[in-house]
Image 1 (spheres, rainbow, N blue to C red):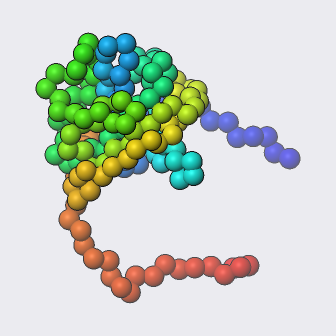
Image 2: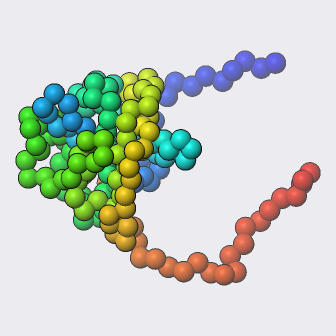
Image 3: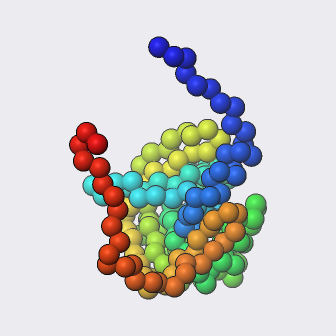
Length: 186
């Protein structure tokens, strides 16, 4: 039996490798104690269809994580290519917390009460189902109470190599494209 392989991965090395993974861009929002919170996130996923669950990771030290914990609800809004300024705004530390409504942000309230920015490609309104500590972050698992695709035809905003990106033009895939397969025992 061989000894387990150990590697000392630095935060910089992990960050550099993770930047090569393209992701969508979303905004996580919550309301609690007369304040509204918003944060740009890229660590969002649907987790289950039955029950309908989503997950989003946020810094465990974030006031937004505490607001979701205390209120028990949140929303995740998928941003369009036209919403890059919104993504940049809420990626800035401290820019996503306001006493009362967030100024100059057209929103509508989701079924569970969290805010949904107007014009987003899709949104998920959720009640907190579970919180899982994951290193310096917390994974917020939400049971979806409502969802919509207001801008279903809008192109999504992407993030890759530490930059916001746009989806390129659609090109038809060649009908003759095949992938090699291996049979059992090959």
